[in-house]
Length: 189
Image 1 (spheres, one colour):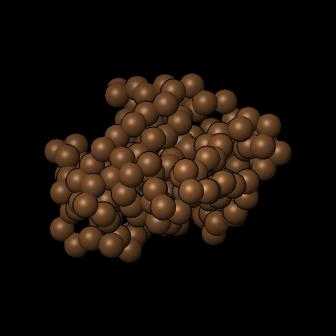
Image 2 (spheres, one colour):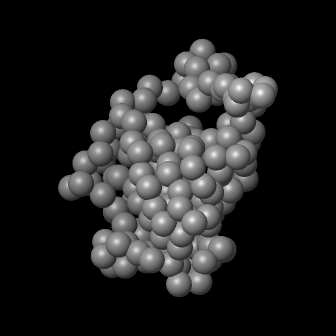
Image 3 (cartoon, one colour):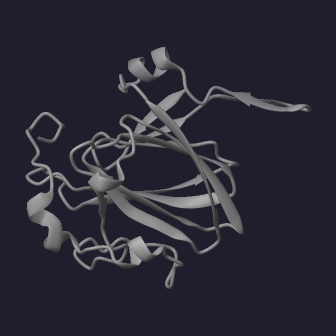
């Protein structure tokens, strides 16, 4: 299993070892010791599964009082997955990183607490599974607009299909005062 760094410290790409033969394949999605040794000593509390059609964009989402780390993988189709550092005072505040995740490349992305997350579907349909480090709390949700010009995310879609909540997402500068403050250790307070 490989743990690859990105331009945003804490956001990792995980490439599992895939064993293929004429019968199909086998891989470990999660192995606690390997994740700890790879720099991710996290505890996951919930598994989620979503299905979306081509052109759907979900995000950008975060939770403020109960921030979630997310381990994201695609089990069918392909998505463009995005993490945005929303920790005020962080050296990488407002920066984003995007990665293609697919059922064919088996890659996973770890998005740490203090980051907003979103994705858009680039195949006909996609199914994602993701583990989270804290429970979902709808009262704690933060929705940021996908096309915030201050972030300038280079999404591979022009006119995505959005939920009503995502359509009403705020620009970062409108909610900045509510965001966590970076404490210098990688965590937010």
